Image 1 (tube, rainbow, N blue to C red):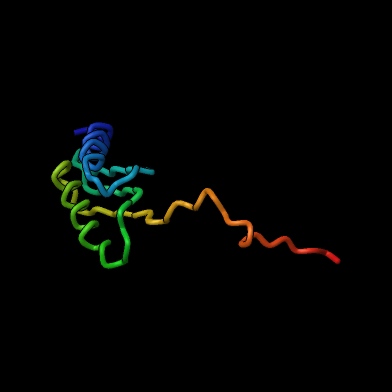
Image 2 (image 1 turned 180 degrees about the vertical axis):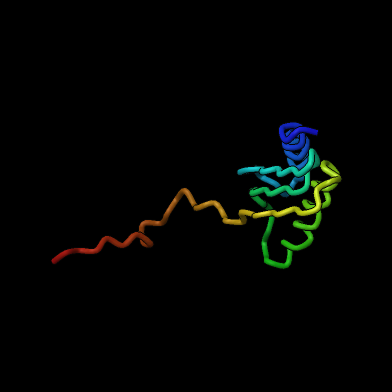
Length: 99
């Protein structure tokens, strides 16, 4: 399996997960013609508290291992930042004066 094939398989697999809102990057490393490491940065959605993260990461790791069974090391960087509100109340805006 080439790096591009592995990346495509991982991408397709991860995008089936309802808790993944997008993928920033996927890096696949190989040694002796075999995929040995996968590193990914992705957007995790539906995370309301920190305790929700470990089971989600375990599920993502299992999905990657299913797509690329030879991967011995899997690194996941979840982006759990919340979207910024589009409407900001005017009372929360502070304009400082130089007077």
